Length: 638
Image 1: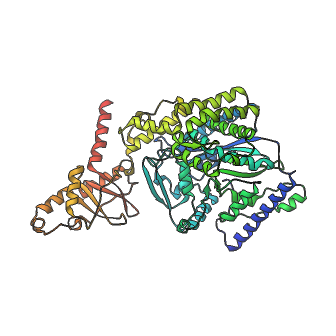
Image 2: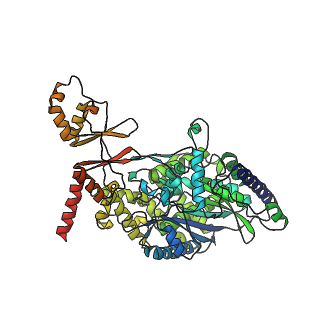
Image 3: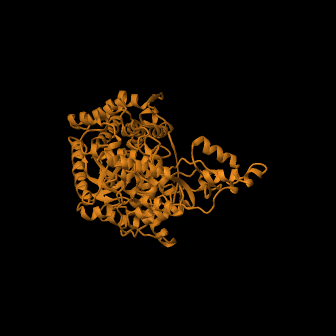
């Protein structure tokens, strides 16, 4: 995501020129593969990209990434799409010896450098797949890093989609969100690992990478929450796919692939199959001026960067991405694993990477052609099952029989990964350190996802949802300061977030979203019963598009029913006869003191919360009494 000279707008001529450059790069790669001597082979390197969140002293997203980058004098730290995200990149390491321990140590050193800078800006670093305290109001264009690439990406994706982005995820709870930009992508943070392979072995190892994706993900899940809902064990998988999905309604009829995908089939012979398939199926989103002719460079004995192909490839998001790169005038191919989440700890992350590296090496030694021992459909189904259920998933492995992820990992895959790491000469102490971490986590079923959900279950109904999410993030920050992996973490407690006061600064932090509403044509009798059954004094009235059109309150309703007009009415009385239509409302961003002042000024006891004319919540005088009660209790304790 680091290109600086991206074109904000591509007219038809620009598009044709860039497409020509892209096709020329594909042909050049074909020649490079045929020649064979200009793409590195026989060398194995590993690398990583660490995405992360920044939070403020209230444990909420801190949009200070731009300011942080101005102070961090290290090119390995770069921006991501959100002002509350950063990305750290480590130099590649030769795969062998103490590379895993070096990876952990160097990443910790770089993260400490980032922590020092952002603390001066009043922020902290959090390693989480999805930040529990994130709200929809954080995902606005205002919080997008002001870079041409991100604006161009948002414009291109939105134009191709033809409208808003719909996020629909069903887990323990259900999330249904409509959003107007690609900023939903900023809700995700991953830990991406790279594995360099030779061109002659690419297809075989890429297929193995797809085969092991499900089990590795099941052991690594760390994103069970989104906007306060309990969803998938690794909700990132669903969020990221939908956040950059360019498919429109016609895609429901045609077989149109998603831009974020696992893939549709095995690779038969070459990395070129992936690039040709993607160029065939996906529109060009971003463009730039291409200043190299790859064939001229090859004639001169130099290796082309294939800039057009690399830019295009960065906008197609396979969970196992094929990558082409050049270092010191030598080209290479990599497999990039994008499924692993950020966190819960650096040790957990490197352990997940070690498990993946070990399985790639181990299976390559034991299986000649993975396609002959497991069906592609089974591999794809494993990926989805792991994302949804984590270690509770039932996976299909090489013998075709379903088995729990926990059993498969502990009984078969960890021994295979150990053998694979040993074969590559990884230090024995490091193999024990990282694979024992995975084994202990899987054996105890204490993944990052289960730690978050277990902590929430322990808190029960204490505090508000906002307070419970803040406690989770506060606990993450504290535990990530130490070297212990997540299976050794104590669960989060409500008090870890500090004062409850920051949880009540804005209306959206405590408004009720579990609303009982009626239509204006329904009978008043329904309103009476709703008030009686649920002990509420206010019932909003919506139209069929969820627009707020009125409000029925307890006292005016009683007065109407006791009046001559109410007693003389024949037949059921429609809600529209008794509802108030001259409404006073607030937005979710309204400060609490502002909401209180509105209620005092208008002498009302209820405030509907409206966003884009749609009813999304409600606050009442009871909510303010509860806040006042907590304030008095805290004052008395002091």
